[in-house]
Length: 110
Image 1: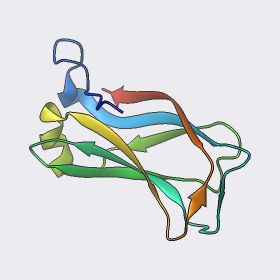
Image 2 (image 1 turned 30 degrees about the horizontal axis):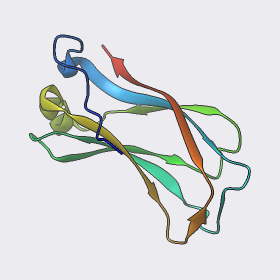
Image 3 (image 1 turned 135 degrees about the vertical axis):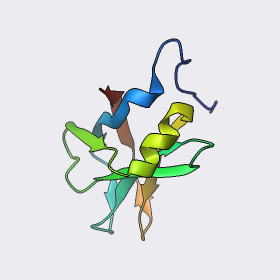
């Protein structure tokens, strides 16, 4: 799968990013015995490589649900002008089976 980059600076002033929004749902066949299974949302920037924005719990995602993850760390605001990727990583202490759907991914900007 090709890596997707954020829009060019002429299309998005990355200094104004204040969070990530997304709709998430698990498939009916999704199963995982870890009640704390979640999606970790991370932004990547050469100024602060791995900026953990927040997590989306999967136990509540049987139906489409919108999530808003705010950037809260002041050091991250300094790194956002050079942000390059938003990465969604499933985290679990036990194996998972099935699909996770992520839609309407966007940025909150000021």
